[in-house]
Length: 222
Image (cartoon, rainbow, N blue to C red; front, top):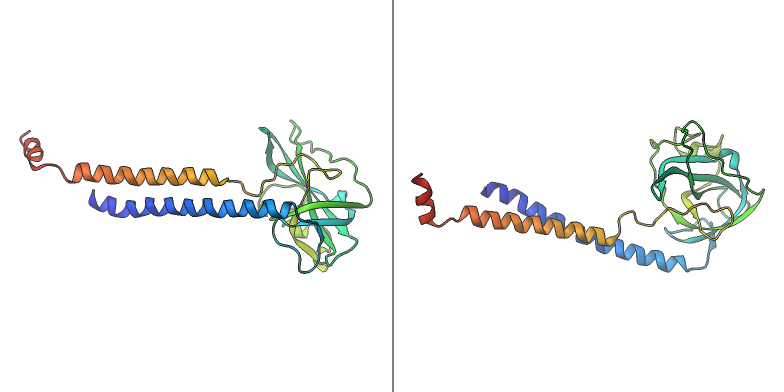
């Protein structure tokens, strides 16, 4: 019992404090997001842009090269995240990838949803976000990663992050992206659980490891 407690008590306490640190970091992250959300949008320059920055995208969308990221849900309904490349007309970069949002899937998985018509030129405002999928995630029209989607794309300067089209923008679909998948409150709840487990370990150790000699002698008689 002593060896068990020596091993697992520091582990549970450490995990509790780690969850508290994650909760603090997530709170700071969300505060930073709220500040940048109200900032003036900027063009995609070479020195731009930090995560959650508000940016302006001007150029030509290429819907023929759009793709659908699978395993996305909204309100319990399965669907896809729609990502469209845009050939930029100004700024440092040649192309940027824009997430239009979520679209419902067809009950027949063999049939893919249509994203509808997009204009020849656009001026959109969006939020800089990290790509939230891996190259191994199921998606249409791509097998080696989103940067290799367009023929000869490696010859061009591509904005390295994904741009989330803001809700009020034309052609925006259902907004499902969140700056943090796990809110601070949940991390705090996890911390409470780990500390409760640590307290339970200590209680069991004190109860089983320090029995009164009289009780031990009585038990030995049976």
